[in-house]
Each structure stands twice: as C-alpha cells, then as structure tokens.
Length: 327
Image 1 (cartoon, one colour):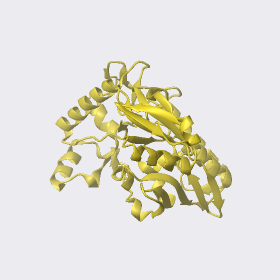
Image 2 (tube, rainbow, N blue to C red; image 1 turned 90 degrees about the horizontal axis):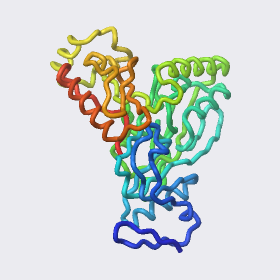
Image 3 (cartoon, one colour; image 1 turned 180 degrees about the vertical axis):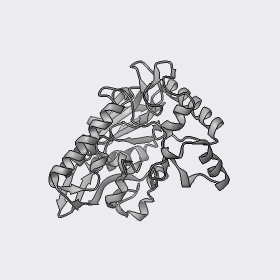
Image 4 (cartoon, rainbow, N blue to C red; image 1 turned 90 degrees about the vertical axis):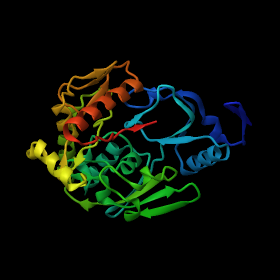
C-alpha cells in the first residue's frame, strides 16, 4: 500500500502495480515544448487503456483534479505548477484493415503519417511536421496546407468518465481548431479509426518530405516553440456581417487562403516581429511564432499574448484566440 499526501489529506492507494509508476512533483517544463511551468503534484504515464481508466477513476474517487496531456507541444503550464494529477497519454496502437487504420491516441502524429506514407495511404500527408500526438491533433482538429485531421476520421473511441464508447465523426463536432472534446473535458480520446485513399507511396513520401523541409525553415530545429501560437482567422466566422466587411477593407485580400487569414499577417501589421517579454520572444521572421530563449516563464508568455491581442483588437476589431492551451 502506498501513501500520498494531497494538501492536508492523507490518501491511501489501493494495491495496484500501476500506482508504483506515479511520480511526485514532476517538472512539467521537461515535458512541454516551450520548457516553462512548475511541477505537477503527481504525474503518471498511461501506456494502456486500462491504466488510463484506472488512474482517472482513482483521481475521481479521491477528488483530485486531473489533466490529460499528449506530447506537451501545445501546452503552457502555470509557473506554480499543477496541484493535481497530470496524466500523459501514451496509448499506442496501429492496425490496418484495407484502407482503414486504427491508431492509438498517444501515437506520435508524424510517425503515424510516415507509416501511412510507406503503406501508400493518403489523406494527411501534408500535415507532416505538426508536433504532438494523434489524440492531440483530434482534440484541436489540427491541419495544415489544406488538410485537416477530421477529413479522414470515421470515428473516435473515448472514455466518457463512465464507459468506453465510440463517437461518430459528426458527434465529434469538428470545426476549425475545434472539437467536442474542448467542451467535454472529461471525455478522453483513446483511439481513432481513419479511412484513407490508396496512392503512390513515393509521391506521399516526397510530399511529406517537402512539407517538413518548409516547416523547418519557419520552425528551426531546437526552437522552443509550440508552432503557431494563435489561431488563424476564419473570415466567414466574423460576426456581424458589418464587422466582417469593415475588417476586409482593412486587410490585403490576397492574404486570404482557403477562407482563412493568417494571424501572423495581423500580428506583423501591429509590429509583433521581434517583440519580447522577459525571455520570451517573437521571431523576427514570423509574427505568430512565439518562442522561449531558454529561461522564459509562463507569465512572460501570457503577458506577451495579452499585449498582442490588445494591439490586434485596437487596429482590426478582431480578438485573437490562442491555439495553445494554458494549464
């Protein structure tokens, strides 16, 4: 039997081998791409569905707050850490049946894409280079270069805090960087089923390789950044219509692509390039690339984000929304 202290409460953990793997006061900055944040009171890596569900039920029974993460590529933990349980979802699985593929939510997205390329299965090859896990990509409905993760999804397997079940694509309520999971925080993604198209594997490999090369120019290797910090602007989502018209009059219409305007364009229009707060900086070559020089803090990030959002709102009447998640 193992004892853990949560505040003034002494918690007894039922004998179970998975609890031996709980780490105390685990530094989150070692996990997240931005390398910021304090420690998690408890930290657990779930490699199996049963382990994930068991640890969730334990936290629920003991009334301990929890937070599920993937690779931490899109996460900004608080400098004071997280006074609860952080669970890293590392559930991996890969099973192909014809043009359908089942994959674990903890599988790395890039490795998944490269595996599909080798098998000659097309549909998300242009998303190569997006950091994080498959589950994280589904949660945030990730996409790049005209492709989105939702395009090839058939259904998603979840644990809804009571039982395991499958959600159809429609039930996932996908939208631009949106999904039902952002509202249903207790719904945990376990696995997903994709339907892909057969294509020449050499062409798929070439496509992903070229995308990765382009991304490496924008996001150099070793740069401590989450990718794009703010979501792009979906033009048709701007309401009311009068605001949309006045907004379009203020911008270069040629910058609109696939119905979206890059947030980087707006940020650069308000002088974002090269700005900094403490040790957190904005790249000189891209207004939507916020990175840590190595000694920055979550507070620096939030301060800089607040300044940028205010500048864009004052000039364009548009409120930027973070693509990253705060913990």
